[in-house]
Length: 419
Ligand SMILES: *Cc1c(COP(=O)(O)O)cnc(C)c1O
Image (cartoon, rainbow, N blue to C red; front, side):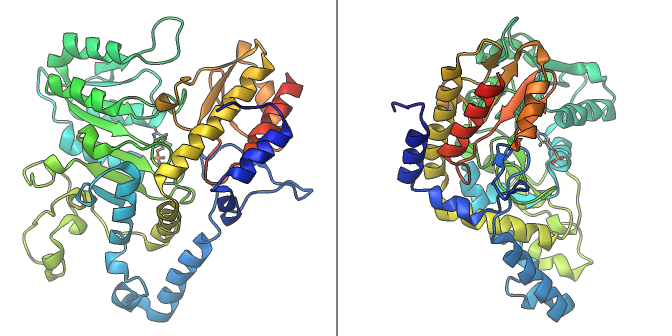
């Protein structure tokens, strides 16, 4: 596609955009003059769909009118509420319904998954993460190592090469080829939160499995952004939050994936509660524990309906639109963003996100020379919401659901003036 650096061209792209109407289905925060903020942090907290309030109100009303009977009598009976989310969530991450459940929060799910899938022995116990893994993932892994009597130094980091920012899959291959006998688990961010690099999950799974290492993926920056095809990728497990690209509200519940090949393995060690007990006898209350098959077999508690109602509102919207068309617009939107930034031709900023659209989602990470945070602060003063990540990156995520080509044009115009 041949892009042009004019407002008229950006507006023309919006006019031709079949998804442009979706913006209206979201609350876009406004400045004090009533102008929409330029919101580029859907990768941190997605905006609120206008329908979310109705979905939550429905449950509040049913609770008010029905009390405990709402478990069976609510419009959407609460007893089965998590099941309403499964098929749509599975589609978003390219999984089979048996492989997916919505529960808890992301870091909690990572721990529960490591209970089952991080089974270190005296000689095979190390964990591979990316050198710039999200802090929560690193802390989770460190604490698991210590919990099992190892040291937090038993992490192996997959690092970018000297002077580079992005990861090479060959380097992971080398780590596993040379140290694989000591490695129990690879826990990798499918889309790196810092650089926006989208890694080849299938290849990571192949590399890990070649030396009998378990492979887990954190999809916090992938779900609702790229199409990860989790089932075909053959990774063992994955987890992601729903408040970033999935627009389900601050601190909302997380998704969990366990590959079908493990779905019937009742011998996998795991923590238990009444919600991973066989549904048909759960309420007999006195049965010995009988674990459910599939991802539901990792649940512990009865689910928080209000948070799930927000997820349901968002997933219904994703389902109506479909990831395929969203992704198509996303590549175009981010491609235009990249084109405009390159047009500025400034040598004090540099995009570190991969140039190949297949190796990134919607986010561009802009590295600022000399870690000059004032550029980010000035953007914020101009009601442009981006985020600063230490040491030196401004992350900007134009999302295909509610960002326009004009948004992208405007942010770059202001950026250019500030530079
Ligand atoms: C956002 C994010 C988290 C946050 O974890 P919570 O448990 O939801 O607070 C963890 N890991 C990654 C990679 C993230 O991007």
